[in-house]
Image 1 (cartoon, rainbow, N blue to C red):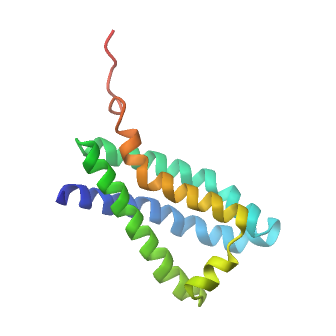
Image 2: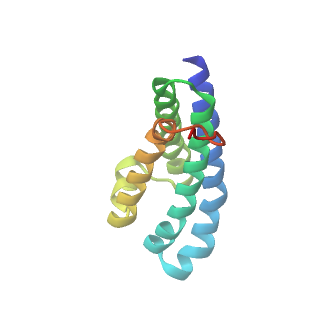
Length: 136
């Protein structure tokens, strides 16, 4: 289980780093041009791609489905901790203010992406390992 938590931490760091880079670009460059909703929706495919490849990496490092799920759920706990801790602090919002300020469309897409983030290592670990050859 300790290995799953270490992989979950690295998974969180990979996806979080991408969000840390893309977030300021979205807020400072995209939002003024296309608005909050569209900016978040434009960022979403990039983040889902990062999640997909990071989860594939995590899945390849863990043998069991239980360990892959644990890594994804631990990554989610860390992601929510960062979101609710650091981001709210930087923006000066309380949790109710943050939730009330979320766009219903982009917010729903964000919640769905968090769900995918949590289960992606387990889902991607179901098939053959990346780079493996299928038997004929």
